[in-house]
Image (cartoon, rainbow, N blue to C red; front, side, top):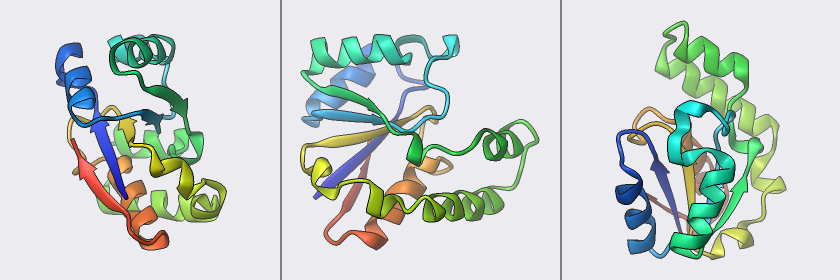
Length: 145
């Protein structure tokens, strides 16, 4: 089973939605802590749900279980924290939330993409979340768009 990830920054709306359509995405799982910021442009929660439905025929869901805490995010982003420490703390957080047991693997059978703001997955928690799920659910393949 493939699970995708995508970031919206440094992409135009056209690039973003064309990429989702080209990959047959049917569900977007928003794993951001803050999904209503004015800085999000076309990716604000209410607008994104509308665009996904109308352009891609896809559903929108917000999944806070996979989002970092505000404190964790602030330490990394605002205080220019260390990526390796952030990684350890984020993985500890989702481990404590038991996301592999709380989330339904079956819900990922429809083509799902995890959304965050980072333009690439290299230094983003969406990659860490996918790697975590790969370790706990058999047959998961991560695809970063």
